[in-house]
Length: 364
Image 1 (cartoon, rainbow, N blue to C red):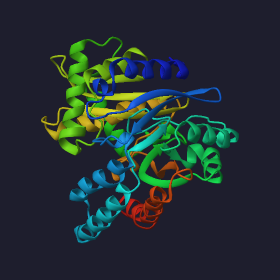
Image 2: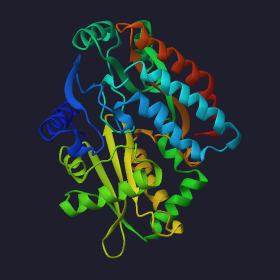
Image 3: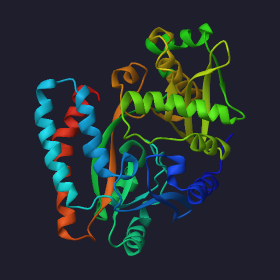
C-alpha cells in the first residue's frame, strides 16, 4: 500500500518534536523541523555545534571518526598508517570549520535517504532561503546519486554547492526480477523456501516486537560494526511502523521468536533497507543475513522498485545483481567565513583523489 510521503514527513517530524531526538536515536542530539521544497515536505535537522556521536548529522563523524574505525578492517594493511595520518590531518582541519553547526535538508537520520523529485529550477531560491534562515550554518543534503538525482545535483553545483563523495552504494534498478535469476540469488531463494524460519511483514507491532527488533539491530550495527551508527530505540521502531514509514519484514524460528528482520523504507519507485538485524550468536550456516537481504530483494522485485542496497558487503551484493554507484553529499558554504570554507577544499581533494579510487578498487 502506497503511503502519502508528505504525511509521513509531518508525522515523523512531530514525533521527534514531541519526544526529543534521543528518545528515538539514543546517540543523536538534533532538532528536527519540516522544510518545504515546492510541493514536497522534507525532514530537516538543525545542529548548533553540539558534539556528535552519530554520523547522520555530522560530517566529522561520517568522514573521519567512522572511517578511522573501519581502517581496522581495511584489506590492504600497508596503507593503513598512511590513511590514518591523512584522516588525522583532515580531522584537525575540519575542527576549524565548526562542522557540527550544520543543517541537513531531507535528512531521515538513517544511513540512506531516498531520492525526492525536487524541482532543480528552485535550487537558487532554496539556497537563498536556507542561508537567510541559517547564516552561520553549513547547509547539506546527503544521499545524492547521479543515477537518481542528476538534474538537481547539476543545479546544486551551478548554484555553488560542493558535491563531495561520501561512500559507495550498490543498487538494483534496471530489471529487478532478473537479478533474482543469478546463481547466488537462486541459492538464497532455496534457503528462503527451505522453511527453517517463517517470514512475514508485521501487520501489528507489540512492545515486545519493538524491543526485540531494536535488540537485533543493536547486535549487528552497534556491537558488531560501530557505535557511531544511529542507535535506534524501540520507540523509533514502533513509531516508524505506526506512521507507515518502515515495513518490518521478520524471520521467526520454530518457537515464534524473531531471529532476524529487515526494515524496508519505501517511497514511490524507490526502496532501501536501512535497518536490518539478526541474532549474531546463531550459527552462520543458518544464513540469517542472506535471508534478511533476500526479503528486501523479493519485495523490490515483486513491486518493480529501484532498490538501494546501501553500502558495504560489495562482492555479496554485486553477485546478486547490484551495481556500484558513488553517493555524494552536497554542501553550501559560500556564505560562511573563509576559515570555515577552506577545510572543505581539502576534504574534497582527499575524497576524490584517495577515497573514491579505494572504494572502487576494494568494492567497499
